[in-house]
Image 1 (cartoon, rainbow, N blue to C red):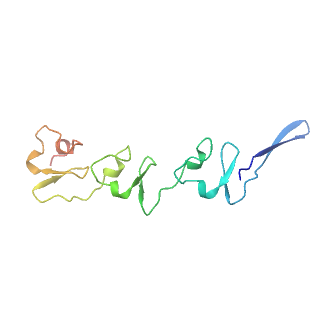
Image 2: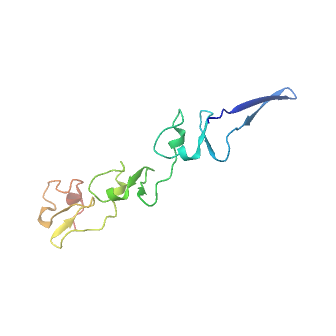
Image 3: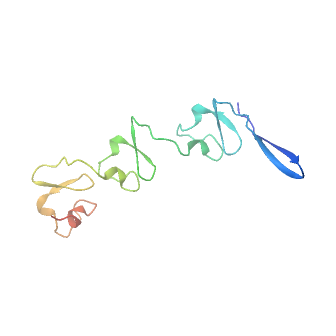
Length: 134
C-alpha cells in the first residue's frame, strides 16, 4: 500500500507555516517523491520510488561486499583481482602479494617476472612495474 505525504498550510499572524504530515509508518520508507513503500523494498537493488531514493545511501552488505573509497559497493570476491571494480581503484590497493619469490607483485595484485620491472613496458597493467622501482 502506497501512502501520500500531506502538506498542511497554517496561517499564523499573517505568515504561512507549512507542516509536513508524514503518513508513513515505522515499517515504511518515505520516498522523496512523497510516497511510502515497505522498508523491505529499500536498498534491495531495485528502484521502487519514482526518483530512486530507496536505493540511495545504502550500506554495503558487510558479509559479501566491501565499501569503496567513493562509496560504491563491490563484491569481496572482486577485491585484488586486477580489475578496478570500484571505479576509483579502491578494490585494488593493499593487496597481499601472492607472487612467487622471483616475481614482482604489482599494486593491482598481478604477478610478473621480476626481470620485467623497469623495462618501459606496462606489464602489470597499472604501471606499478615502471613507477615503483627500488
